[in-house]
Image 1: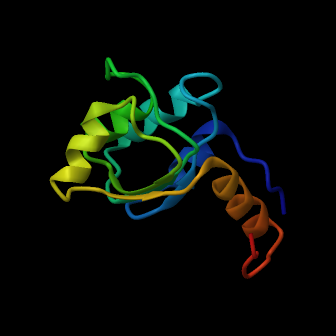
Image 2: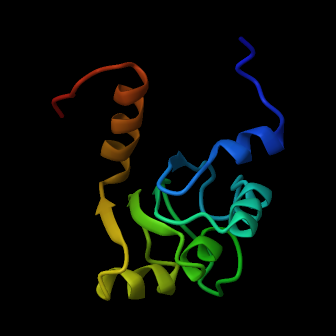
Length: 120
């Protein structure tokens, strides 16, 4: 079984309610094209795992997901540079789980290693 798919094949697998992890740190390394494709598909109720979101000006990267009300839950260590994320959180439109950056990274590492929990 080939575990490598084309860009479109991978995007097609993401449906309403999916849990996705998005790389990048602020706008650096963020898969902008993938985010734009998700917006085109109109996917809703995503749980997004990402170290930080970005762009206080909006209309770019993670802000697109928030502007289109696509995120149900955001697991992160920082949201301060995207005002729309904070607004939606205050209105109860999105759930946000905050973790210190080191703990967030360790949660990802432990999950990838199949560990049930890690004492810190």
